[in-house]
Each structure stands twice: as C-alpha cells, then as structure tokens.
Image 1 (cartoon, rainbow, N blue to C red):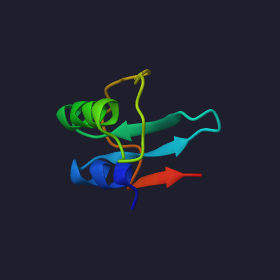
Image 2: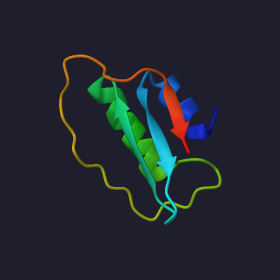
Image 3: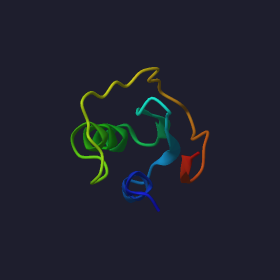
Image 4: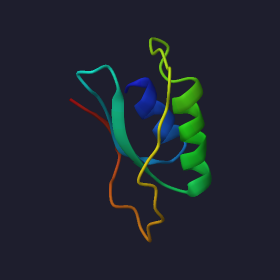
Length: 76
C-alpha cells in the first residue's frame, strides 16, 4: 500500500489517486463527509513522507447516495 492508500483505508474511504507527469496528484475520494474532510486535511498538510505540498485544490465536490467505487488504489 502507498501512504495515501493506507490513509484512505484507515478513514474508511474508497477512491483512487494518480501522480501526473507534471508533478501533481489527481484523484477521487468517496465516503462519509467528515472522513473525506479529514482526508483533505491529510492531503493538504501531511501527505506521504517524500511529498512536498505547495498547494491543494479540491473541486467537483458533491453529495452521493451510495458509493460508486470500491477499495482505494493508486493508478499508474
């Protein structure tokens, strides 16, 4: 597991993340709103030990009736 996968699973979330060629990370996270917020804080402030976070932007947030994904994966 990557650090991000481990944190997502610890919070009971589902989703995915992917490193881009431009040095950014994109992804999608689903789960209880309070846990999603906690994940956003972790992504903004901590991240993996080797990451250098200069800015975090979260877009396209919406409420869903049921989870659309399963597991938490890193995409390549």
